[in-house]
Structures are given as C-alpha cells and as structure tokens.
Image 1: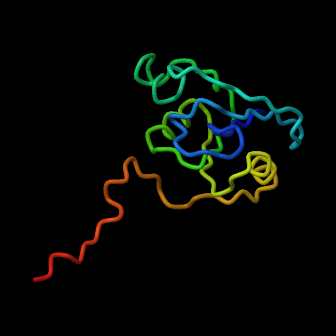
Image 2: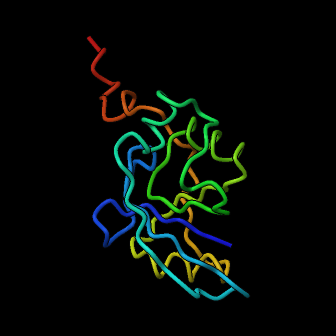
Length: 131
C-alpha cells in the first residue's frame, strides 16, 4: 500500500493539496513503513492543473495510492480522489513521518470541519449593520 503526503517544502505537511507538486510517498507493508521517496511533479501534473488540461479522471502519478495526507484539500479534489480510490485525510499533524505512523496506529489527528472551497466567508464582522 502507498500513502502520499503533501510536502511542498519537503519538511512539513503542507496545505493546498491540489496545487502541491512535492509529495512524500511511503511504501507500507504489514502496517510498517518499508520505503519513502520524494515525488516531484511538474506544474502541469499538480491535481489542479491536470484536471484543467487532461481531465479530472486522467491518469496521474499518484494513481494507486491508497491515502493522501494533507493539511488542506478542497471538496472538489477530495471527491475526485475518492473516485480514483484514494482516501483523503486532512490533518493538523505537521510531520510527514509522524502522520503516516499515526495513521497506521489510528491516532492521526484529523480536521473535522468540512472543507471550504474559498475563504470569502471568513473574517468579516457581521455586527456592523447596527444604527
């Protein structure tokens, strides 16, 4: 089984899975990590770009991965990956190695709020209409 972790900076789990081009891909056998490699994609192979050019269900270097761990992933991307058989885990954990180990143990801290496709509804003061 393979688990991919978004890591645009190669050190921590990063946000915006759809735009990410660097992934740590872990090879899992018998609930143990037996290998880890960095997958670097060209811009056109990021999930966001490949959906625009090749189509959302076109083959992708991460096809065959069982799980994608990210700090954030939009609803559209999550739906697309599920159709490809890839589960998505959005986590507050920042260390890729710890995240994969925690996932295997069932202790990975997950973000429970539903993903937002944009941030336009946040940070506005709704009490300024009082006369």
